[in-house]
Length: 497
Image (cartoon, rainbow, N blue to C red; front, side, top):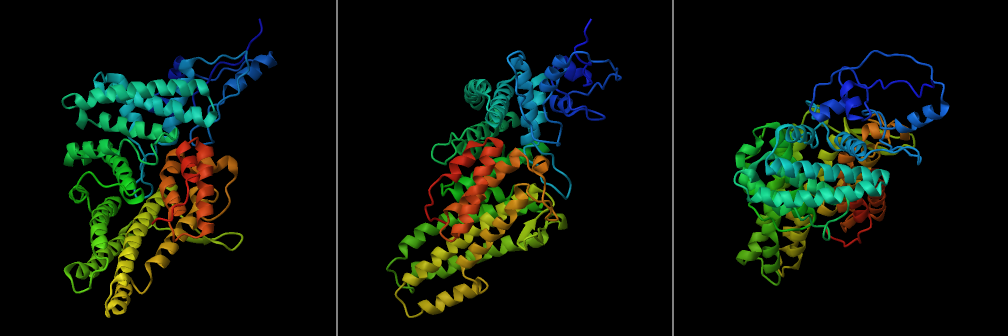
């Protein structure tokens, strides 16, 4: 009898589920994702393989990437190898959880969507409500789509869209069911549907169709949403999407941003930053009407007198942002290094820290651009005191014009790109392409998109900066199959702040 290959060395549960096991000791990642205790591995048994053809088929079949080792590559299957739908779907889930969920590390790395694997496992084990059902469909849709786009698997993409339709139907029922809107599973489902639409580039224009849902559920969930780790992680994602819509895309907030300030833990650096950004959102929406009313107005009128006060308020908010940098853990501080070519670059302890800094820089750019517009309105006032007021305004900004400060902030984002994309390590040493995906995960690439796009649209960014940002967007889109990145890379420069 011809032996067709040695027995699988994976854990018992992975073998029963017929999926690739990464064989990590003491427990494999698949079992952790599935929410089960890993049953362990059977002793190794060595046989002689006398069939080279069978060996080649088995080798070709075993191509699921090991945890944190290298980028997932879907196997190239010959017609003689048939992979079942269930196996493909399990691989998609493992890929998605590995690429779109990062656990928080104390004082080092903020987490990203770390709630997804445990909530999904709970919903599969004992979740029979409409919120749990909605979450399962939404996770499947995002997971199938992420692998389908990254590995170009049309059949899996079709399955993803079916799951997406089911998730939308269940979401409507969950929002109507008593008690369901405030459940973690309901908000998590909206998070996953947002990711699905962005993976597929399905936004209407650039506006997200789910931000209104985020604002509604954040209001309903109130203070209790920050009482546990799942709730905090969900809130962080929802909050970021809400601020992108307001600060970057210029959408009007549907809720009182100041009401969020009381929710934050002011001993937690990211929450301190989020608190200040909430104040900025409120501020920038109080400015336009006063700027419009100030045209052809004398400085001595109440409207004219309000402009210097606006500058003072904006300057205080900018000062709050700069003070944030002085209170963060030392592990989160950026490192200035010089590349082999003598170029100055910025690195961090992790890509997640770089994302947090880009969020900070984007918020500063928005407030500085608003101050620039106020200064422009001062210049339009017909008064002998105009020049004196403009000089005073610039002195309040540290003697540096808003335009120069904005260019410097864009420059810092550009200097961070090589590290953020995984081209160099924290010391500035080049990273081999085969190792880059150990440093950069898809969810981190997803979080990098909007600061890069903002740079392509602002009138104060240079042509070189816009080109570098657009190239980074194209790379993230092709590397992780995130079509929104390609949409943003190809959007037309509209010379806005």
